[in-house]
Image 1 (cartoon, rainbow, N blue to C red):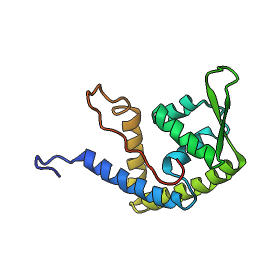
Image 2: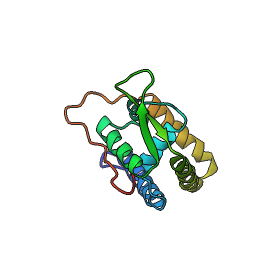
Image 3: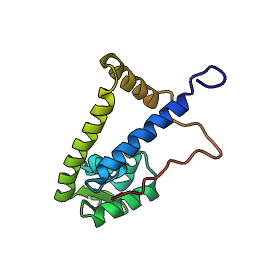
Image 4: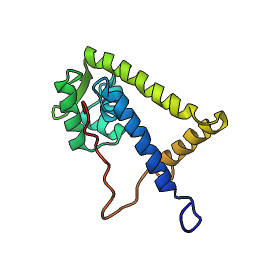
Length: 160
């Protein structure tokens, strides 16, 4: 509760997000990935999407996407090939090594998320996820114009 008696929703969401991201970062580092790299690989898997399409789906800017893909290529997890429909665009292809790493990363991710949600009473789990989903897809789907918007923190551990 803040000084006005109002729940400080932003700080609750920030603290839970930071704690979850930190746990995922630590666990995924064991297999050489970051949460962002896992998300990019999982999104690219069998999708025939361009770098820009993946960046849009994942919610990262073009520069961050390039850096992430450079790291994934260096690790042998992904490659870029020319788009068959747009010679300026590159389609992201997940390699067999990347595919195997994505399977491991998805298992780690599921383990952490199940542990986090499992720490809540059963009747609160679906409400939490449902409410957050409705906010992200509805009221909070499009940030308003802001002269100096807060920056999204970039992860700098392991690949990606």
